[in-house]
Amino acid sequence: MSLLDYHAPEQLLDGRIILVTGAGDGIGKAAALSFAGHGATVILVGKTSAKLEAVYDQIMAAGGPQPAIYPIHFGGAVARDYQNMAQKLDEEFGRLDGLLHNAGILGPHSPVESTDPDKWQEVMQINLNAPFLLSKYLLPLLSASSDASVIFTSSAVGRHGRAYWGAYAVSKFGIEGLMQVLADEVEATTNIRVNSLNPGATDTAMRRQAYPAEDPSGNPQAAQLMPAYLYLMGPDSRGVHAQALDAQT
Ligand SMILES: NC(=O)c1ccc[n+]([C@@H]2O[C@H](COP(=O)([O-])OP(=O)(O)OC[C@H]3O[C@@H](n4cnc5c(N)ncnc54)[C@H](OP(=O)(O)O)[C@@H]3O)[C@@H](O)[C@H]2O)c1
Image (tube, rainbow, N blue to C red; front, side, top):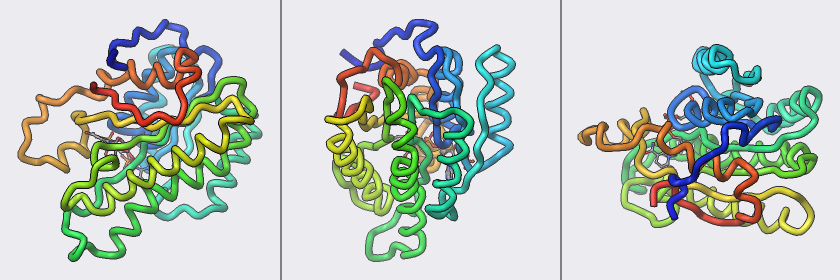
């Protein structure tokens, strides 16, 4: 059965506190709106404040629970910034029931030999190091939940390498590794489930950047993927753990 066949009850995420990275655009925006639409208090994390504020306004206009906004630039943030974020969220919420690692950049499309080392580092910082640091400092809050779900966002090129996808592909392989290591660590002692999800081709700014010659109307909108995200974030996926999943199969 495809994860997209899942039918989420309207109140699926009532009372849950869920952090979404990259919540201002693309798949993260759709996820934030969808989670809030199903009752969650969403912590909107991302780079561009104006985009996060627009999502905040949309959630409030729809009558959803009041979200929180946390702008942060993963490219420049250091460990202390993530520690501060975790401390503030602890003071405000005391726990976290969901964490969607979604923010990411494509980086340069080039052969390894001609890849700019600084660009490589930037992709690793945003796509892999940031999810590591966030996971590390948010684990105590996730452990305080009776039913927490962590979703790492993967990609087809993070499961099978492809020429010229360079740092992006390697960062996603790293994401799969981080997912497996973390899943194994928390399995016996916490109520946290940890999985990775490959959304598959989706009509967003990133997809248009990656495939400029493609007709974007052939790809699903981010909102159409939400059954998969709701399933993994909500209680119906209890017991699904350490899996590398695909939204569109
Ligand atoms: N779209 C696809 O076809 C596809 C396929 C496979 C996997 N994915 C994965 O799905 C996830 C979402 O992709 P998308 O297509 O929705 O991309 P997108 O539309 O480009 O959105 C990316 C999000 O990440 C945020 N972000 C980028 N750099 C950041 C930084 N330095 N600090 C904090 N936030 C930052 C962006 O914020 P700003 O807008 O403020 O920059 C934006 O909200 C990514 O992990 C991507 O690798 C996408």
